[in-house]
Length: 228
Ligand code: TIU
View 1: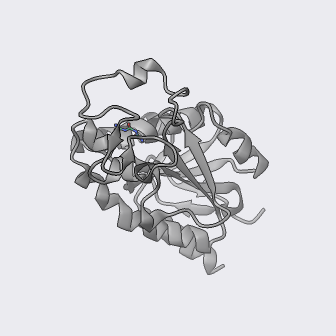
View 2: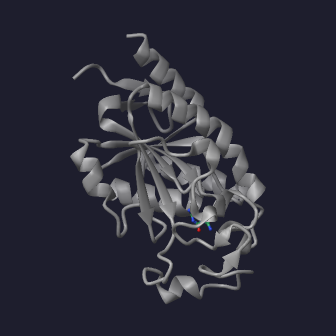
């Protein structure tokens, strides 16, 4: 194996071999990022998440160029809602519930326009898409098997929202033995304080769940690799 690439990160440098690392893009769906979707029905200002798209696009381009595995996830449910627990369906007082008709189609339902990934980050041919019914990308999906099949042990994690699906996924991944680097400007929250504290929680205690770095530091490491 060649020398690993090193990313300047918290709590210390993150080492990775591009051949055994995947970029994981969590739930960059219209339902969370654009008006008229699930995020907005919960009372959130979705414009806060849109700032994630440009740096994440740069990361996606560079990762594809490096020939690394790219995996996209989408949170959502079957049209008959058979995979949506009543506890999730009935939670809170959203303006529209999961499965209701919204301006971008039925809220959080697979196959609807709002459920799909934003144009800027659309999956390329051959990139794996994991459809998940929960917040974590490992729960009730084939993600663990797909990663093992590809001999991938490290994940560069991006997407939305920091303290919900990103956190749940990083915690699930960490318990399964994956080493996760979360890119701070490529994850987003509807709440500034959750963004700050959510990132701090990952790298605290010597990296209790993983590492945190800016996309700039990740891109710099990839550039170093391409010059070898
Ligand atoms: N509501 C919220 O912050 N997030 C979610 O419901 N799902 C994801 O984070 N993808």
